[in-house]
Image 1 (cartoon, rainbow, N blue to C red):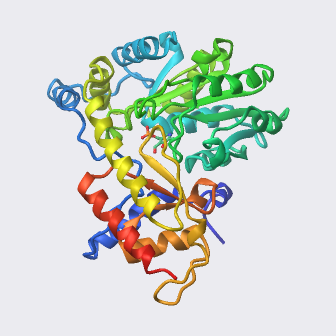
Image 2: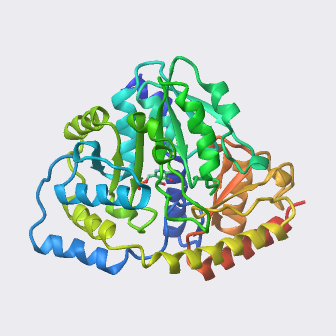
Length: 399
Ligand code: PLP
């Protein structure tokens, strides 16, 4: 008899966290493994931002703050939304949390009743379905296609909406595909959503700044009529290389923000006071460092694309954003490894590459899209080149 709560049956450890654990274990055992599985930039947090954190410690900003964030941070978030997205949020329509992850989770927990449906386009970020299930909801997975740039179509969205639909999750730039919704593609979706007032919009904009050209479109800005039922979620993890600082933020209707505040007050309380001070510096300090980062990332994206183009059995289109390539690997499924194993799934392909190429990747099934691999290219360029060579060499040993 398990001592665990029944709700634990519906969730598992995040597959990306699991792969990182495997990599750490292999490294601890003395193996060199390149981790192309993790959604994390290798760049250091920009110095002025880090300095603001250090100054906060020295100044004694080391105490509890308001649960939903300091007034200074909320003002910086409001200014960011206004300046970069044309969105106006008042202080009671803004909350800061311990990563975007916590805010997404709390929003679902605050709104879902047993059996409520949440539309999640696939491939999806690994945590959405499990978060929905933990909150008692039912993830309704809607597939997208590589031939349509992995963009959710208006028809597919319309067909998935029922009277029980509470949320649709829209994530652009997308993890794991790197696809970026154009303003027109976003407008096609918001037009559908305007006709279904029971549906709220969860906009996960965490990769907003990681784009290689092309406009950024967030639902509440594209369709102001949806503003009262949209939660615009963002954070510092990806755009500022601040994953460990754990700061996310969201703007939305005050009734929802205050419910999320209640949940936060009874669980984790405020995000780290030190990180909040650094976040004020980040959001107020401009994005001067971004151009150089994007140039480096673009070169790395090229390295991965060239490797894929040269490897029989892997296929992908160049993504417009984030730092992932989502490659089809169906051409490798059914092949025979040198040790006599047949690779029967994308997980087998990923395991083969971990063992034979010493490169960790995440299999597409983890994102609800079997037959694929997600390659995260946010690692040092030379390391990435070596890893790509090892992948190509390992695949060449398959029959
Ligand atoms: N949303 C997406 C799509 C992500 O990929 C991630 C991180 O991997 C998050 C949210 C969570 O980010 P944070 O570090 O702010 O919790």
